[in-house]
Image (cartoon, rainbow, N blue to C red; front, side):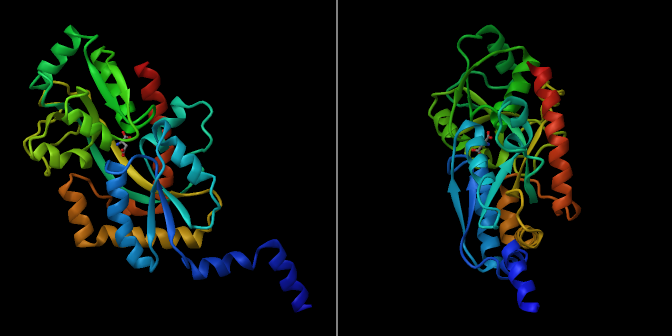
Length: 319
Ligand code: ASP
């Protein structure tokens, strides 16, 4: 009888799953980053996954799968086997703005299993040093006077850089020529060399280049200045108080991933965020780290729902 029962359980997979979860991870885990290497999502993924690998005793291998504002990589990750060996680093674009802009989106951000928030990232309006306007006020005047000359880089429709600049352009009543990239890492390089004029992007991509004088920072779209960039004025100080926006990056697993597995991943992420070295690397680039209560899986689940609703509204209003 016992034998028969285990045969039935094995057939239905009931025995297999807890056993798998117990030994997880027994091989390397792939973390899909849906943008090019060197950009903010990639930087955050590499910082946290390095420490998480040590906790898990298995390597987390970052795989960059760029395209369509990050939705290509997230679709690939979402459609992977829900066994904990493929996870994804999503963000405010792929898991907040994308549903409003892709009617045929092949994943539901609110259905993916939340693992945890890795970092919040204030948004800055930045420009090439080869681009004439020196301040936000000068930029606004130039943009209004030269609507056909202005170029703006972004990381694809629905990405953070795209959606946050849709908001900015809507507020200013301007329509720059949009130049899409596979991520804001490569976009930043082109902006530095003067091939594009400006963009809106996550602080972690920009802090070092701003401190080093390679790019011009017009303003940070947060209520307070960033301790990582104390010289950069807030949008309020620079004369654009209504432009307030913050992005974030977070880890998710495919629908159906066992709770024991995502709990282990959440624990490893928390340990990474508690590690002084990992923390300091993120803080130095201007990231804002989640508090204890913001580090739970439940918090991220609720947050994603709120973000999808918020961006639906914000993008409809900006059209
Ligand atoms: N920050 C980028 C965005 O605009 C993506 C990236 O991480 O490269 O969504």
